[in-house]
Length: 555
Image (cartoon, one colour):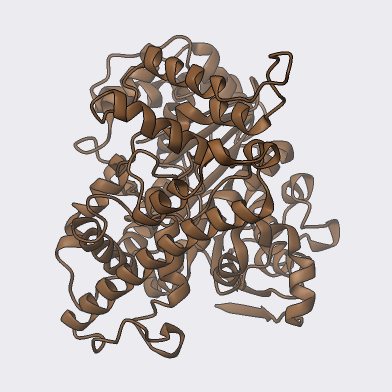
């Protein structure tokens, strides 16, 4: 087994912060650190494979290894930008590694001139040392062998494919937990429906009637909603507005509070308009999201042991908090939105939320310490201990702060294994059948066709239409493979002849445009997994370049 190693030169921290500035804004220093410690393995330096690696090397993964026992051919030169004419006949793994390593001097590159099936037979543990494995152009038999090894050792696997005008990705990962899921359009955590003591005290200390004109027009809208809400509750048996009509009434009460000039014309008080605009979202009932409730009830949370991951120790501490100090609620996020207000009162209000959030973090920290002591991982520490000087099972002070700030956004993804998908007893046949029956959504038919292509390869040791002049003769053979596949699955469905013909016409060609698209999409999903930020796909993605459409489906 020939191996080549190319070491990156490395750069200073200052250079890196400038070089990676834009991505640091997306996933932060801790996300970048996770990326830089990652070891990624690519099986086969195909067009799509090298495109994936390109998009991981540029943002600075720690190292990559290409496993490929093939030699560079003329076909490779036609669609792979990381191989050249002078490379024909040379090791595809070595040449691709050399060119890819030039993209970023911070990244180490390795090449292994061996096929995946040989490595699996001689040294299957080789693949278990990586943070992520990317598999391209593997036959069904080898893919199942590889996935079984990685699934057992809990190494994430991403299967990528570029086949004619089709792109395909399949993520196989066990119980992937995410703290920073970065949801779109998340509501602010203001607790106006259940105000905490310091918020009540601050808002009650402000008297709208005794304010000057300037103070009145620069009172934060959050305070305005609080005050008018208290008045409403006093008149409605302590209940907030219950429906749209009542919320509209409350908005009118707020509008009446706008000062008028001598002519009786309302003044331009933007803070009151903001209060009216934000009323509906501010009155959303504070509760624990269903996804977080599932985590609090999860077996891994309620049955901790000495090998439990830090995430579940934090979830257990979170559960203890909600059942005690939190009184059924998650820790306060501690942030407020921008609003029309004078600097002094805005900062005071901001500090009220930050102070309460800090109290909640301290409470969760005590629960973490208690849990660690019970697990025999740490002694019970005093509440005011500087966590940065202690070893809490790799749980730092910043980890706890980040966890509390994102408590409402915790998520867990459980992908089915490749073995489950390829076993008709466990695969989600109903999901496939529903999509095949939907005439307006036919992209899943290409999943069936890709599986049919693999059956064709298994039987004939080549792909349909691989050689010139074989397209027409391979169409009936391919049709038989697909029909047999559907029959084995017990599905009463048929695939149009046009689709069969198209798959044969592709001849397993990798178009660079499709490969580049899948390469970018795959790298995005891998970065999500490596940084444990944002939500990756669960679990299959299909791209139809003919229609410029895509489909994500759980299989």
